Length: 336
Image 1 (cartoon, rainbow, N blue to C red):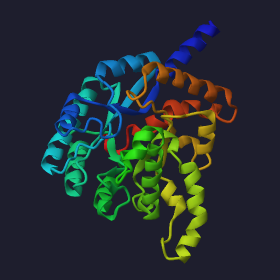
Image 2: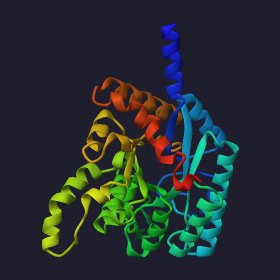
Image 3: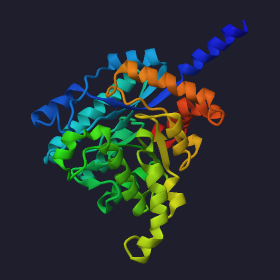
Image 4: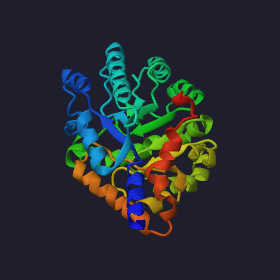
């Protein structure tokens, strides 16, 4: 009987897992990219995706709920009207998926950047009318990087809404095409790009100034566990040279959460805990960019090291689902 109860509890726990990093690659999005010959803009083919294939992976892996966000590239090719139309269709599609499977999916809205006014308008519509669970922001859109002064009105609006903001790397601009061809973006540059964008935000105190935001950094925090100590140590030197102003490190780091998609490991988790706390770590899969059997094996490996490492055992359920449940749960303004 005890063994049966333990097995039942394990099953219940497994089915509570929340995946905060998965992507929707809809036909309308692919059509928009096809019209602009942009299917290979990020240097590699976009994977096939469907609601059915994602549900199949979730059921096999024991994932209860997945948070859907748009993949890269950003659907902007110089025509803001077209971009607004494509983005609106994408957001309405994602909202329909959630309404059809309310216990299985959450979603974060795409915005028609680089037009900041259009982005604010779409964010308002997505949050108020479509009831988006958050907002996805690219590290840059055609060279407009997070942390840029022109984005302050958007950040102020999202701050008023206490929004969850999911970051994701996109192709940097400018970029060395030869380097990208030799070393595909996903292998290394996406980590640099995430670190670059977050560092840019910190240097202007964006997270500190808009402290109601809850910002999810992807891929095990990229290089931030290494970059942040370096930035801290060099800040006085840069300030003496009048290259940067005052940086409030505590307030700047406070809004960040970190998903464990990509190259997660026991060592990566421990490294992240040098810059954050266990209540800020979240499970992420990166479906459909990684084969389902690889993701399922990776999730099992995560469960194993979270169960066996004495320093991480108390936080296993927090990392796998409780932190995400609290972040996206009831009582936050974006869930009304």
